[in-house]
Image (cartoon, rainbow, N blue to C red; front, top):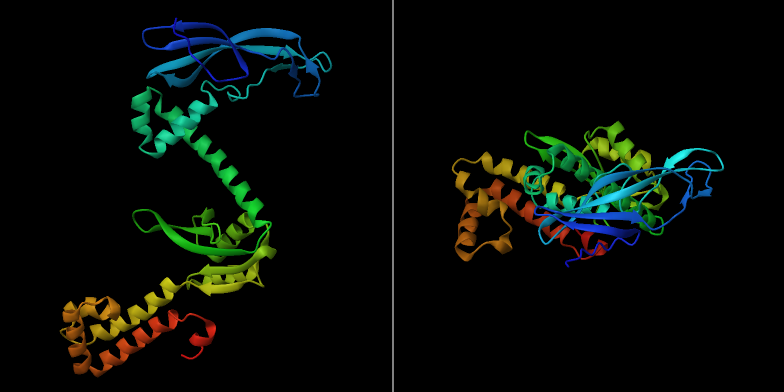
Length: 313
């Protein structure tokens, strides 16, 4: 006879039923005693018994349900009544923890609606399970990061990301050394940024560098939270400002609309025919040439291998 292997050590299988649409496994907890959550005493006095139907991982593409015998105990020390707890099933839950994790991983690759249809589970239930597991994983992630950060110097990074269409942005705080997100905030003003830094950075004395853009509230919040840290404006935003300034020079010269690409692209990345066209434009327009050489000089500055070389510019 076919037998289902649960691989749930805390349970003893009492009976198995193979039905046309699913498997049904009757289980009981092996432990005869339970520790009272109110006073901590062990008790084996059973107040009453109930049965809970719990969905587990499918077997051979058929749903598997556990009929769990749930005992309620009465503590002989404090006389309180309490329900037995399970390692593999959350309190008052009708899905095993591993099935919840399975649903969470499935949703990551598609949508809640698709998983709802595939496993015949209400949308609200899949949504609740997904966000519950996501919350637990975020807490685990945060704990690991904080443990690592307590033993080493930190370089933080702050930037804004678009969370939906319509220019809706949130501030994101990263640990640049770990490449890990530490937290997000829906605003980017001084108070919101300071709140984000205060809540997510538990070891401010370990912060040595903070990489930010040119947004002034970021700068003020960083100085307030980490007065001894070195603030670094990230390369992307600095180069962007230089490129935008040079592009303004181009726009003032008639007839250069189609030349934007070869003027803004790095000289080393241009093909030979494009370089010839570029040289013609620079010979023809003195102001354009001056702006272009400043742009390239700035790019050379950023490619400096060390501070000594950079100080020569």
